[in-house]
Image 1 (cartoon, rainbow, N blue to C red):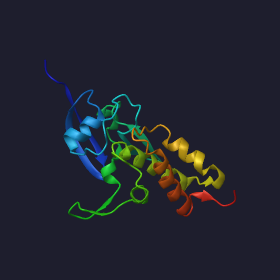
Image 2: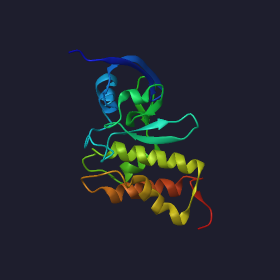
Image 3: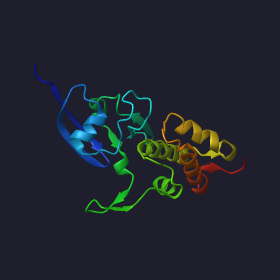
Image 4: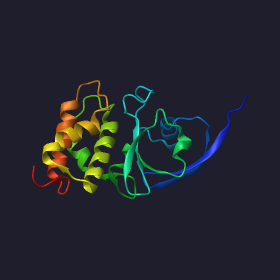
Length: 183
């Protein structure tokens, strides 16, 4: 019996990848780890429940969404643009990190993690939220419920939730244009 492969071509963190022959039915988290050497997206539950494995899919209309890679086949991403946790930081030509995103910075300042296993998923969710709020700001009295809605599906076994939420709230409240004036 032989493994049936099919080529996949996509953009990951701004770079073209492929065409790469990959087994049909291969989950995206495995493609990222084994074919791209991008191991930041974590395989947690393997059932799409914990959201540690999420990546950002950038849609043609300029919006973005989180997608769980442990339950989504690699070939689902054919032709798409995605961002993994490795794509959030700014890097120089040598690939060295020269700066981090506002979310990453606040997570560090708030020490929003203990073991860090779930952190990539939380960074992804918070990034998608910030991008959404740039297009559609939220009223100040809805900030906390908006953050809860964005992060609620993510599981942290070390109970770092309060610090994740505090860090995201600080970014939302201090970034111009994310909160509507008024309430």
